[in-house]
Amino acid sequence: MRPSSRRIVVLTVAAVLVGVTQLACSKEPTAAKAPEADEHRGHGYTALVDDGHVVNGKLMLEMSVTEKGFEPSSVVLLQKNQPVKLLVTRRTEATCATALVMAAQGINEKLPLNTLVEIAFTPRQSGMLHYGCPTGETTGRFFVQ
Image 1 (cartoon, rainbow, N blue to C red):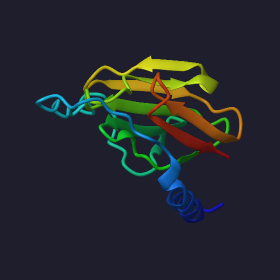
Image 2 (cartoon, helix red, strand yellow; image 1 turned 180 degrees about the vertical axis):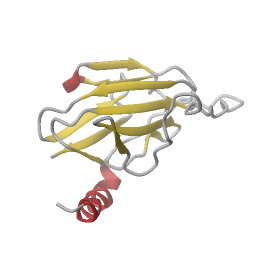
Image 3 (cartoon, rainbow, N blue to C red; image 1 turned 90 degrees about the vertical axis):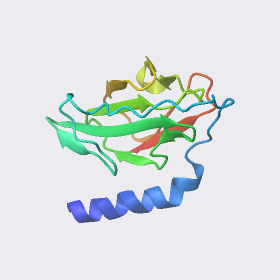
């Protein structure tokens, strides 16, 4: 599949599924919001907004945890057996997502406030790969083909 065709497929899947990817949970917001950290400086990563890119054979994907939950909220297309590195930063205290749990990959990583956390895994099966907060109220998913 040509890169431009792949991008169209990814965008189409994301557009169709955008409304059903996650439910955010929140607790009462504190008086002041936590400042957003510029966590990418000094780590050698480029901020990734859309669909990431491959560095040394790994697909690099940036995610944030905000009052809305995991962002980006659309389904991201992954390739079976291609290593992935999530670059996750929790930007708020007003969320239950203080950790990222991905049971199918044996992942349960704490997400300290305003700290870049790198989570590496390799999807081995096709289909939906679910992740979320420890309580399961804030969720997201990847589609592995």
